[in-house]
Each structure stands twice: as C-alpha cells, then as structure tokens.
Length: 61
Image (tube, rainbow, N blue to C red; front, side, top):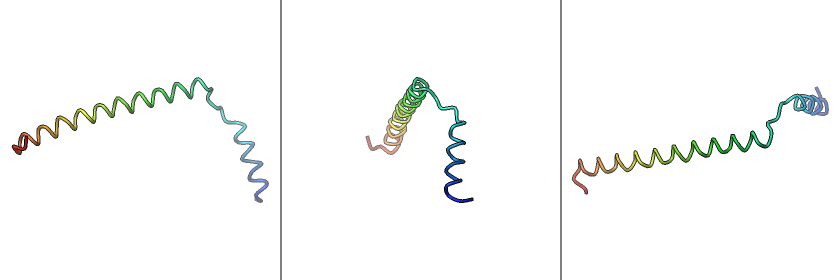
C-alpha cells in the first residue's frame, strides 16, 4: 500500500464517522467540567479533614 492510497482510505473512513453536533460537544464539556469541579471540592474537603485529624493526633495544632 502506498502513502496516497493510505490517505485516500483514511479519508473514506472519516466520511463514515458520525460526528457530534456542536450542542452535544458543549453538553459533554459542561458535564466533564462539572464533574471535575465537584471531585476537586470533595478531594479538597477530605484533605482538610485528614490533615486536621493527623495534626490533632500528633499534637501539632
């Protein structure tokens, strides 16, 4: 297979792809960002709790 045939076949395969609409991409992005923010807040709160517990157990504060 030569390089020209490869790109021709790749283009043919890409024409078969069902691309998401702009609205679907925006909704997916919003869902991911919401999840990341929520998870970040949960990890931050757990970090505060654990660090406070460890500091209390060690008598550091």
